[in-house]
Image 1 (spheres, rainbow, N blue to C red):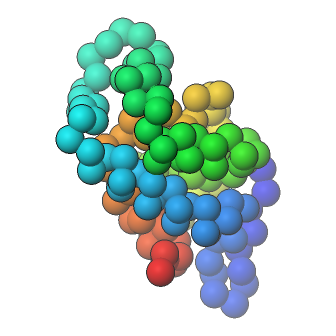
Image 2 (cartoon, rainbow, N blue to C red):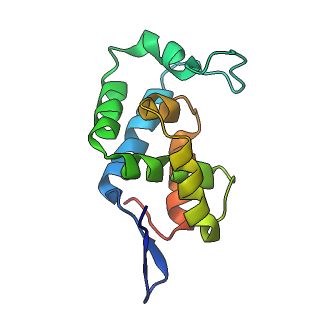
Image 3 (cartoon, helix red, strand yellow):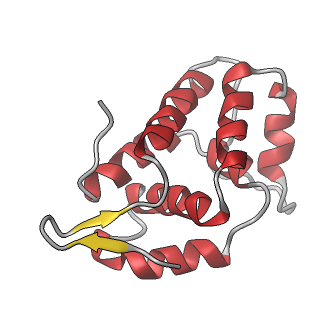
Length: 139
């Protein structure tokens, strides 16, 4: 996995388009603002597919469908970066750990990345915080 750091700004160069991440943040805000969406803090289900099960009731939701479409259009490395931004934004890693974070996120990658991400109620805030920690911002 290649990650470039701009020598002048010492900023990590993301493979995932910033506009895509900002749109994912907007869509997650819309989706999670709905009263009908209830995602437990601690899922408690022994099944690994709990995000898919919980989100199944919302298959007709336009914000969820667009979110899934954007994630599905990203290549694996770009999906891994979005997951890494989530993990860093929620405080699991620091910016200086970006390379090991990408490795860890890649090791945990699945075909259900969109549902995994959307199953985090604080996703918009965590993605925003992750971007901020790397020096990126959505307008």
